[in-house]
Length: 224
Image 1 (cartoon, rainbow, N blue to C red):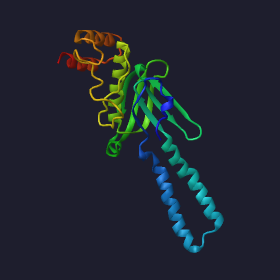
Image 2 (cartoon, rainbow, N blue to C red):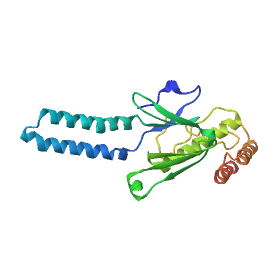
Image 3 (cartoon, helix red, strand yellow):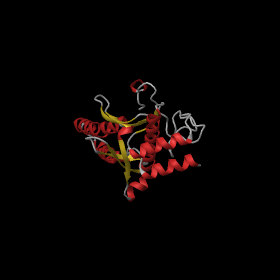
């Protein structure tokens, strides 16, 4: 289920969107197998209509409803925000401005690594603190993508220019022109010299918007 374009701000674009991992449906899968197994056992003996109706209603209320709820979960990374929302008839959700995200981490155990699923921990400034998002597909890739998009957003705000899409690392790109996201050299989209961009980097680092590793990495890019 795609995120409605009409809910985006002017100049904001979607970098990537994804749902929850399929493994969250394990209970619904077991319920469906059990439902079919009961039907196979009962039908040859002439299953009672009321029994069939009750079993079917129970299966629909649990398995089908769970599947529909899973299908409505959306995680959306835009050039300005990270959005989480779910619900078919009654929508619920929340969002973070990329500029208030302080850190993104992921966590997987051995089984989750084999399945390609895990948790994301997003630490933000303010009262919300750390938010844990469970059942995220390829959490390390999503963590890197959020971090890269956040850095691009921070640079854009410091330069006073439009937000740019991050180059997804291992994730499909959605309309992102090649070469965006790296403010290096005289010919960068910002039009600023390397010295000016080094000054911006230093200011962002002093303000705590870049980690030491992010600062060192971008400084190396600018210095060639």
